[in-house]
Image (cartoon, rainbow, N blue to C red; front, side, top):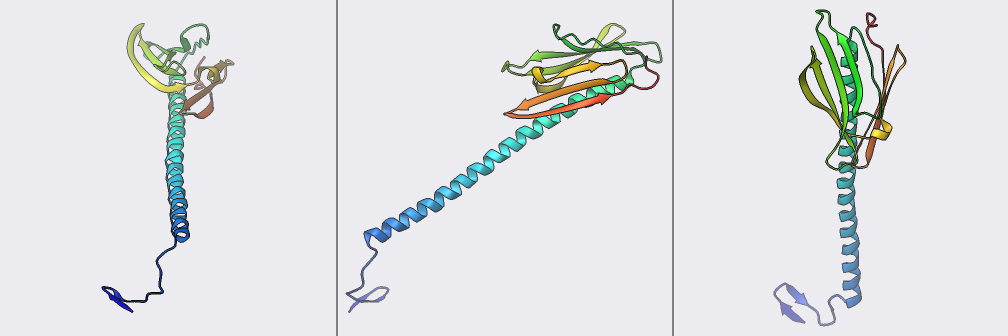
Length: 177
C-alpha cells in the first residue's frame, strides 16, 4: 500500500485505459456537436422568422397605404400600365376642390432583384411629398386590377428567402365615381 496525498492507493488499481479515454472523448464530442447544432438551428430559425416578419410588415404597410388613399378619393381615375414606371395612379378632387394625385412607382432596389414601392403625392399639380411605402417588393407577383367597383391590389414581398403575399380588395367610399 502506498500513501498519497488523497488517501490510500492500492498497487493493483490502474488509471483509465486508452479505450476508455477515447470513448469519453467521443461522447464529449457528440454532446458538444449536438449543442452546437441546436444553437445554429435556433439562430437560423430566428433569422428566418425575422425575415418573414419583415416581409409581412412590408405587404401590410403597402396595403394600408393604398387602402387609405383609395378611401379618401371622391373621384377615382386609375392607371395601371406595367410598361411605365408608374405602378398605380389615383386622382381625385377633394371636397374643397383641391386636386390630389397619388402616383405609386416600383423602382429597383440597390440589389436589383426586388423593388421599392414609392408614393408621390401631388396637390394642385405640385409635388407635395415623396415617401417609401414598402421595400423588397416582387414585381412579378405584384399587381393591381380595377373593375370600376373594387380595386384588387396583390402585393408580394420577399425578404431573405421568406415571402409573403396579400390580396387587398378595396371598395371606394360610396360617393366615389
